[in-house]
Length: 390
Image (cartoon, rainbow, N blue to C red; front, side, top):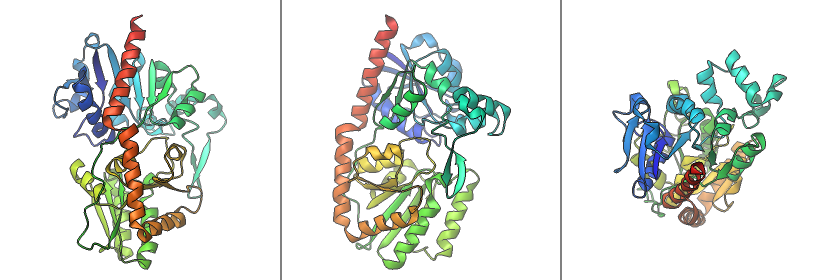
């Protein structure tokens, strides 16, 4: 079987690029696989040994039995594959069940006539009003009720998503599509965090893009309250800086304003290896997200694989994880208070947090390792190729 996998690749600043690299490494030992990337990215794209890389303009559609598209919510990383998805149906791995930012960029903004037309095509009921949710008491569009994924989902022979929630959501909106759930993969790592110079310290970490939906300022507010009670508390915030750096600047200012320079560390734009090391240095990882586009968090899964307890937002996709390894905090009130309580629980009993982390790693080992998830994707691909040849 010959596969063409359309995806961003490192060093592009995309979590999907890093994630798919791991899947390609598993694919390479089992099938003939080519990565199809943006033309401008091809000269620098890094792929695992045994994986050929071709630019979009140099791809021969007749060279593969099946196209696999890893598609997400950012046009700069995934826009080049949009027409191919619609013209050459294959297996769509939809990392973000809702695609508002993608369409914002390709349609010319949320206020454009083209965006309004796309919204009506996706969800005709938006002719009268867009669905809303509330974020810090402000009304925002509820993208889970206006996912804007109809074109790519209905064009695909098979759609893979990372949660049962996302599967059921899209199946209810696009009933003619074939949609399946397979876990988001994670790399297995060490379970015992290296101890800091102060062995009594308890470290929390926030990883991934530093942006408003990641609730980084709320995390800092909760941490400030906890730090006043316990000198043992530490916090590291690590990930890609937001475009323009406004959120990063606000985080840096809050650390200085609250006098947290000795206990809170901001590390934007570190290497993948350094982020992995920092996750491993934590006793618990905080993975908040509100509003959500229905995605399964890559940093959350990475923390599970390393053997860390995760404190996450109480959104539908996170409710599928065992509550012993994924402690949840509300998004509709009490977020900061409950998060502080969860952090206090970790400080009060670090061995219990470590035990939860060991359970999380065991979940990944049994159900979500790269080896397991890659095998599942290849099985889906083989079945799909067989059906398409009939």
